[in-house]
Length: 320
Image 1 (cartoon, helix red, strand yellow):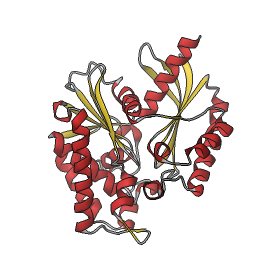
Image 2 (spheres, rainbow, N blue to C red):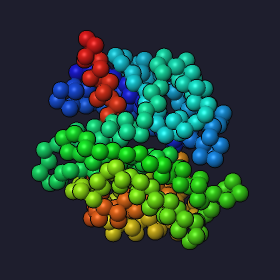
Image 3 (cartoon, rainbow, N blue to C red):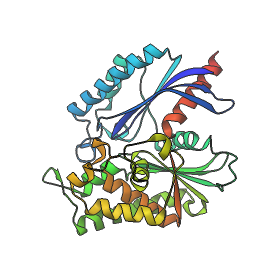
């Protein structure tokens, strides 16, 4: 097995996985997996630039991760940056900072590359399960964008569209610099229309309705699962491969969009960094389920981060 480090830097969070990986068998053994909310995409939809304070939060997390990677002795590090850094006019500042701290340049991947990495991470361990029909539709609801990938043993089609939970919150639920708490019916209607338009765009490329199993990734989906299970705290093992029905997702979404900041923050499994954006993320998930006619979503804790780790291990093996 090859020891690798994978970093996924998105709009809302930056995550690290250090793992021993056998790309031939699909075996991946976690050594350290962690997430830090940095809000790198703060204001990007409005300004087109990465805010200085957002960059500094991200660099602080990178310094913490560098120490962990060194301590665990990873043979190869791959750093992938997604939606926010793709869109920013000053992304060179971000690239230089990461290079100085971690010694590698972040790969600012395209939406299609992001979708393929998410699919690999989410489905490699599902192959051969009798209780899950193919093709899969893997949906990765991030902070700035959502990736859609349809495939079985391999990707058939993928598309990234700009309907992440942070982007939708900033675009529709912020007034006078503050998140409306709770959102108004008009705000929810406008956000829903924006999501539906993005789904139309995704469906031009990806046959969403052909999917037989919907697999949901990332913090909005895992948090909905935690709420559905009424977990006393966030529990990765309980969430991974859990199934949440459409009816339950609808109930949770409606409740989140009616609740105040204090009520959402009081949910035991809620990460503080998701309190303001979870309503938008849940609405994206609900809208997708309605579009494809999914009766349930299979929730995966393995996603683009695991896909990055598999690719890093394959590159390391090829270079030996």
